[in-house]
Length: 114
Image (cartoon, rainbow, N blue to C red; front, side):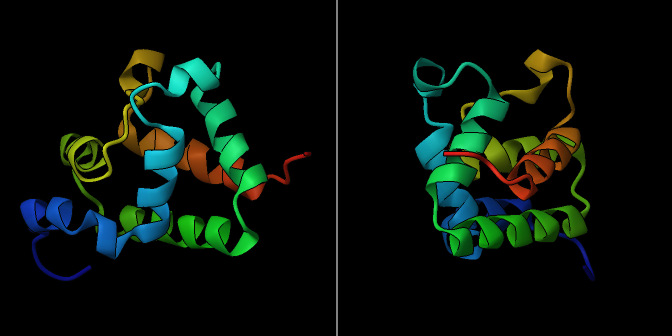
């Protein structure tokens, strides 16, 4: 990506710039996500299993777009928390935000049984 990322604008436009991720985080990583899923990987697997294939593929493409932005990890964390209202905190599991996005992408790429 060319130039400097305006993180405030990116946070404010997360729903329109990354609609599939916005939907996934809102639906599977909401404030009570742990009541429904034992782990973040289980929540991601549920999204992969339950969402339409086109939505899962769009989420994967949006993860690639996020990675290409090369945001510092603290800004990526703000985007996840403030822009996507994601209530999973990767640091609690010893992961950086960027490392978690890698794991999330890998989970979404793995076929999930019903």
